[in-house]
Length: 264
Image (cartoon, rainbow, N blue to C red; front, side):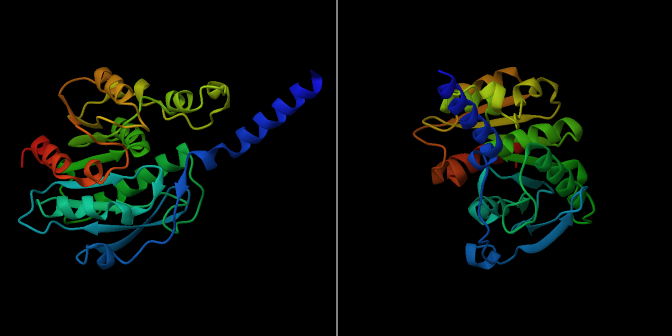
């Protein structure tokens, strides 16, 4: 019995030490903007409060602008090039878009963590606030999955004109319990992203977009986060879509929901 207890303790210790490799899945092979359909994108960079230089793209509106600028907070996988279609669709409807990569993603220095991504979010907002071509009263946060939790936290510190959450979860603890019910997730988890504890204090208009068949973030968990949020708010469910489907990433129903939400 003692031997079994030691094995379990060692296994849990290894899991605790290496858990971020199960949360964050960065890739570094970022293509040129033109290669992913964004020839008009401007390559930009900015520095975080702890001294990391991060890279991104500023995509200006392709039609008469609405004066809205959307900052996209990515999910836990890939790099900014994976969100090029979303940026192109929004740009075509008069929205400027800022795509960027967190620390450790897209060839950026550093390692991702909850506190690190919060610093990255503050830094990208500070950068966008220095641009003369951005209306500071019309900045919108668009958070995708884990990025929704990053956006919720930033919205508490710096409320945007609108907050859009695509496939958000109530907390990473809840996600861990859902996907690993056999593990003591509440004891092990270092990065918790407790959006459910924050969303009631959000003052910005809210749009939540959910995939009806999402197998990563259960729609019921997204709905629980939505229910905890104050008005004004809007929930849009996209039928027949899973977490990583193209339709949920940048399909016409998602784009229409965003356009309707911003009344443009």
